[in-house]
Structures are given as C-alpha cells and as structure tokens.
Amino acid sequence: MKQTHNGYTMIELLVVMTIILILGTLGFIAYGYANASGRDSRRKSDIEQLRSALEFYRSDNGFYPDPSSGSSASFVAVDSALHDAIVTGGYMSQLPSDPKDNVANPYKIILTDGRGTPMHYYGYCLAAKLESSAATNSNCSTALTEDYNYGVKNP
Image 1 (cartoon, rainbow, N blue to C red):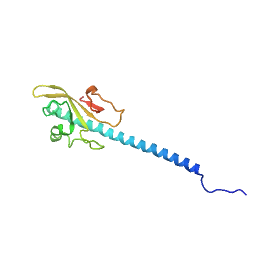
Image 2: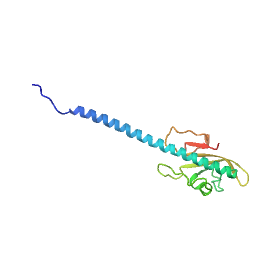
Image 3: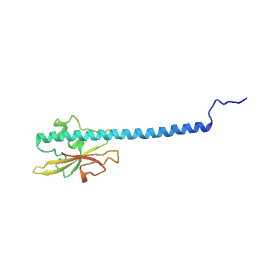
Image 4: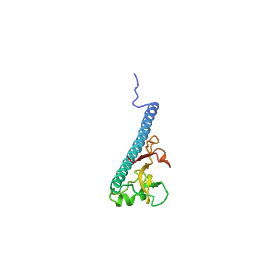
C-alpha cells in the first residue's frame, strides 16, 4: 500500500516564501516611486499656481514683484520673499509648501530683465526641487542652481 503525505516539503515552503518576498519588495519599491511621482506632480502644480499669481500681479501693476527687498540676491526663496505681494495682495490665499517634509525654501524665484529706478522686473524663473532625478525639465536654461532641477519662466 502507498503511503501519502499531507504536508509540504521544506524546499516547497522556501520557494514559496522567496517568491512572496521578491513580490513584496518589488511592490514596496513601486509604491515609493508612485509617492515620489505624486509629490513631484504637486510641486509642478504649485509652481503653476505661483506663475498664475505672478501673471495676475503683472497684469495689475505692469511688472513683477521684487522679492529681494532691495538686496542684490537674484535667486531667493519664494516663501517669505513674495508673501507681501502675492498673499497680502490677494492673488493667492497662502503660499504653497513642500508636500513631503515641509522643508524650508521648497520653491525659489530668479528675477530677470530688471529695468528702471526703482528696479522693476519683467521676467522670472520659478524653480523647485523634484525628487525624480530624471525630471530636469526646465525652460530656465542655466538659471537653476543648488539642485533645483525643475523650473518655468514667464510666458
């Protein structure tokens, strides 16, 4: 008479556990990339909202606001620099913050085409730090620094 076994061998269990571990690791990595991509999309959206607010400001005033407060800095943080012109002026309810860590200075602005006394600016580039290393899409050309790898300039 043939004897039957009602269990699995150790090799079968190890193979199944290895497959589950590999699939779980791949899923975890894909989840991390999906989160980073979502945060990058939010940063791009924030940049477009800032851009829209700056265009409304220029439509009303004829020039873009000067966030440097008289200093010679050309690459300044958006958070405090534009608050008075954009938020207090009613163009946005609040300035956007970084979707991941709420880091300081998630967005920066580079003013260009300054003319006159007092100085009025007619161009800008808004920059953000994206998590994706392949996201170096920018139409600001050489203006990006300090690992800000995404930028848009005035239309």
